Image (cartoon, rainbow, N blue to C red; front, side, top):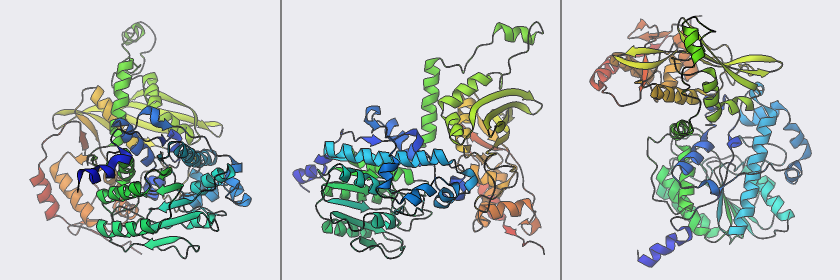
Length: 582
């Protein structure tokens, strides 16, 4: 390839060009059970945005905060009866595959309208700069004029285009839908528009689409090269646009829970490079669509890297956006002299000597209720609790026989509810001091168990969906206290399964048996497996097995692991499940 041809490939997106993005913290879905029951990562938009900001791909001044679209703007596309039905939790629960009891209607509708406003704002800004603008959420292509589905309540592309046309725009528009699923809702919303062309590559067949949609069904197990050849052919059929909407679908990776395309992360980035070159000099709006894989957030991060002239930058395999963000906030809190390191006061000393009032309770001799509440505020956890409908959250700290207790309470329905209940202590494991979590309960008492969100062993109410955030908080607390790491003792099989990505059993033999159990129970849904364990139906080498609630650890620094002992124990044991009697 000649130097000039190589330069021509990249000139439209020269290195150092910063692409505007639309984003708001309220883009996160306020649905606590959607991660575990449906497989949707509610933090995915945040993960992508945090990475881009952390790595200076996007600057703070490149971030635009959208306004919510009005119902007048929505009504240009959606039927009045359907828009009215969105005020019912049952309608939204069906669209998002959750139980109606966990739908905070006003908060969720505000989220939907805000994301839709981001797509409209991005379209208007794209015209001004004659280039790409990104909305970090959106691409709700399953929403039709009179219905929603597939996690799509309103069709942001159709609403944005209708608003532009109301302002006088009459140019040729293309919609490139590279989500793994077909654009059934978008096709219905835009059917009959003479200057709208929709091109789609999808891995699923959802029935016939309106005439005029250029739909290509990719074969299951398609390779990167085969997919890119199909995309190039579709781009050759695309008319020259004055405006483009691109759904750079994040559900195209191999192993995605709902997508059936099978690209690699590198293949998805090459996809975006092809589209970016085809849309050179065209105002374009880029949207993430769906994504139901642990690596999905990396796909759209790669999209923005391509648009910023950094297509060759790799995202480290072990990079964790949440850990990186929490560490950054922790450093800022330390620099600000935040009230996390409150010194002992004269009142504390007098109280400890019996000379004055009671000693101010401190978790592990360090954290007061006020310092913890401020930390929860800065990390955004109190805001997430408020979005679920709990007002005036507050923190209580006390001491128990099992350790120091932290409670987070919030008001709803005229009463105060216990939302977080945790008991911690310092404990030596393998000769090293750990931040040990004796008890942790994350509670969403306004929600209820249902067929969609069944009750797990040990639960009395559904969870808050903040387990990952809690783990990061514990890691930072352990680091601040100079401890070796975080540890806990899972009392149920499912707790160990969920924690296994970062924790391991301290005893190598126990870790080996756990890995054997994971291997042999892999074909069973987690709910069924953990219930079988609780009911005593799991057999170890033909004998009844009782769950071993041993210590799991997350060391802050790498420590030697006896992999030979783990492997030997894993290979010599086998687990089976006995059927229910009767």
